[in-house]
Length: 412
Image (cartoon, rainbow, N blue to C red; front, side, top):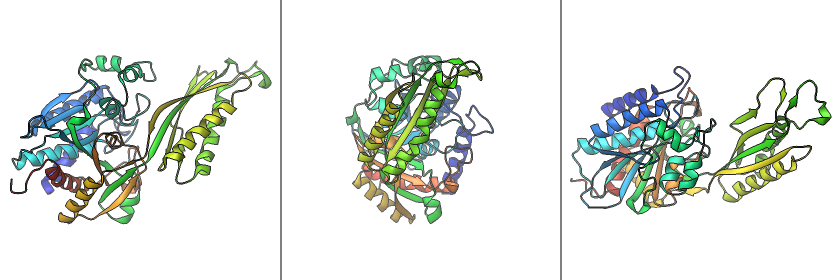
């Protein structure tokens, strides 16, 4: 356990160094130089642990331990390795590292499974560079189709394909994976909330993941001189956008059931201090544990946007992402509970208020997910921290669970 914990700490420290904002948290955008640094590190560790490494046409990384059964579906374990701007060291990488250390235990114990084991490190879960989020898993499973993927652009107008080519990644590799090649998917993630820490419980077994949608709203007005355009003659896009944004929290409160709305990105053009803004583009993130509430949030946001079309202002709403609430597989949840108890690790059921790649996989295969505590409930910030000992506990639970899922007998 101590050696496992030490390796985990070393992995966290190594990957956290690959940031565009040293000393100000982790900024590792997809296909960036920092992505390439983390990519090479992850691939090197996969090779070190005896895995066969490959990448797909999205940039997802796979490390495979072949099974004794030819052409059998694989059990996948892992998470993402991108970050939000100025984020933390654990959101995503903790799950990738857990997958690597499961593979290390297979290697140390000289176990070859019946069904293959694959450690996976995915790109662009956060949506920090390309709008929508969960891009790596959605593209891999065909939910984000070829046309949608190739037309995605970052804030500078660079497409996914252009960004991959600039990074030296192979865009000709297959992007979509046949779901029949996947037997199950397991993901470890930090909780990103206070519940486990407040309860003093090291492991949360996720029962369900919240439903979510992401909208991009464009407000178009008319630019003009800040000093010479009378107030009653203005079509100020920023004023109109601010009115929409200010009204959004009330929609979440009125919808209830823990529904939340967040405006996370806002861009203003032309951006001069003495110029009336003629265009504003901002994101709206909507979440609820009930699908009907997500639908209500979307509808009311669209109605609010439409009501602001007056006085030379036009508003358009584009849906970037929609994911239904997802329940985790009951059999895998049962296995995770059983293995936790056999290992003497305290656990509790928990729901996820954040979206994860696991919810994409839940449409095509059996999925299980573990949470570990986040100190002070903080995430998406430099202060984000989780205990390596808790990651080690999760690795042990996953190792025992994956042995069952890959049909490895204890005497082997």
